[in-house]
Image 1: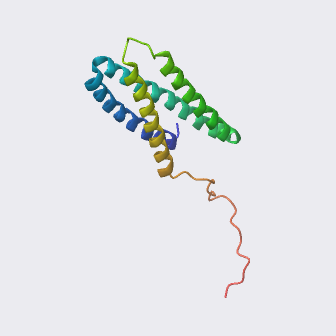
Image 2: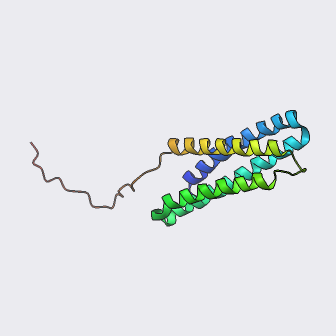
Image 3: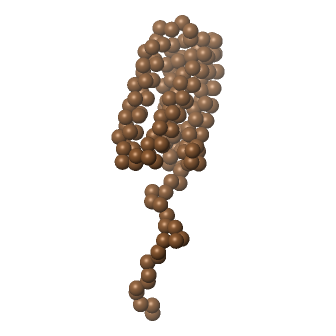
Amino acid sequence: MPSNDARTLLQAAVPTAVAGAVAVAVSAGVAGGKGALGAGVATIVVILFMGIGLLVLQRTARSLPHLFQAMGLMLYTTQLLLLFIFVAAFKNTTMFNPKAFAITLVAMTLVWIGAQTRAHMKAKILYVEPESDKAEKPKNTGSKS
């Protein structure tokens, strides 16, 4: 994995994990152990879904750059639909607090998107490949005075 990709993944996953730990603590205080479990599961689901999505998108950008924008739109739509499916599937569960799960899922998704946006804005990614030293340099055809 190139360093820019790893850096972007790290800069999105770490703030999400920290915010998830805060959500677990808050949920434990508000809803007890089941709330903490729900917040923890939601944090793990978001980090896995969004992390895998970011890796797929970066791989697509390298191998099929002409499909990058369409793939990005499809990927984010699919991720949001899958997150809504998770919320609907665990709506009536007794294993953990579904409200803590749903609120944490939405909050961690927003944290991930914000952190990923910040990482991309701070990244110094070249838009064109720099010329190599071996490339022929244009000759000066103007007169020197």
